[in-house]
Image (cartoon, rainbow, N blue to C red; front, top):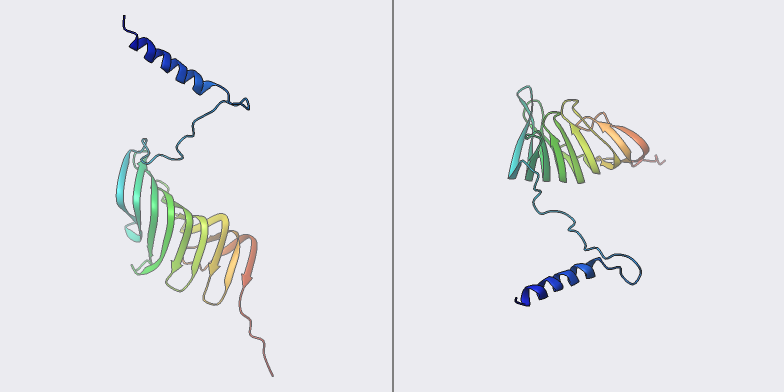
Length: 188
């Protein structure tokens, strides 16, 4: 009988035993796990350069572009990377742009949950920033429970949570609402 298989088995046992041995402080060493997978293995489909048309009864409300789209739940839930949404008015004119690092689009609910440095820039000069917000196409509403900053040409609003229409005209702040606007003081 050869001694090489016995030596290999002994070395394997030694390595496995050493890996499970406690350290000098009495804790077992555990190898660090990877923080995230490069390609999620449970996605139904992976699309690079995805485009989703947001419509309401045949009328285009916007175009959602994403660098990467991972589809789940028979294509009804989409995890998005590098999100860009262009909104349109009812007559087809460009109305504003939303950008975010990531998002989730649910086609059953017609709802986009945008996350990571979310910015909405409107054509009328308004700019909204938040770490997270939701665009609910059915209710025609955007909202969040996170912090936000709304910059308008003549004033700035900040707070924690808001509800608004996509045009940011009927804006309602939820908590810690503050506003800053220039005031002209009359002189004699």
